[in-house]
Length: 208
Length: 212
Image (cartoon, rainbow over all chains, first blue to last red):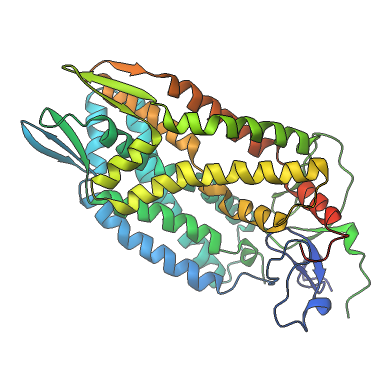
């Protein structure tokens, strides 16, 4: 009944936890049904999320590939009578820095570069550790995953800033701002990494 | 073989799969998993009433916040104002359809859906009405919870203000205040929501009904 650390898990007790409403059910009650549903919320009852590792790896890989055009191509283009001035994410941060707006530069740097990179690397580390059946740092991996879930959304900041600027600076030939090709890639990176946190089942960290 | 466990005495940790014995919680106490630290239960007093009140306020503020201009700029006599919907439309006209759709979903559609669902469910629980599709609505709420990004839009406004300050004078319209209030109530609605209490009440509410 207990695993090697003398702790009972839901799985070893023959129970299943609904992944949406967190209600406990007995496995024997639901095993014979073709499509077991949680009686409280109607979600399909599964012991672990379906194909979690494979799906999460696939999404991470896609997001990593898309992260490259997001940083190489310009994310914003300022169009004025002086011509077009495209700027990538990095260039925008540097411009803030040169204008001595350090706080804003820091926020954009964290939201657009640090957070996505941390999510991609952090999730890859967690997945690798699970696949290598690493025996270390379980609690740290759980905390890191919860942190990744939390900060994921904040990368959308740069996308919103661009949307606001495109709407505001619309003065024809005097000055017009357009979004660049990197905007779609970057938005895709944020969405895909957020979805990767959804497909990942954190209980896999603790499974022997 | 499985022992005879009374399932009402236990909780399962959704992050590490540990089986935990239930404890009685005093107000303002949180129950955390002893192994991985995840918050399992966080009871909030009067959650239903508070959620109902805040979701009504948020719904009232929602349409003015989306339709009234938030700020305006004046360059050589040309004025441009901006609402949330206008920023979506501007990006859409620019040709970036995915970005426009994502901004629309995360800043307009999902927040509206979230506060509408909270209103619907807290009303049903408060008045003990057996309204249809409560379970489905609440499941949808939990699945789209992280996709409502009004706070991040607010931060985006602040960053844009810093960026545009140098270009010309910015005028803050009434929409800014209403948007800030909407944001406050949206945040409060997720703070006041006691997820597990709601599930428990939904279960007891539907105990007499068959197809729910």
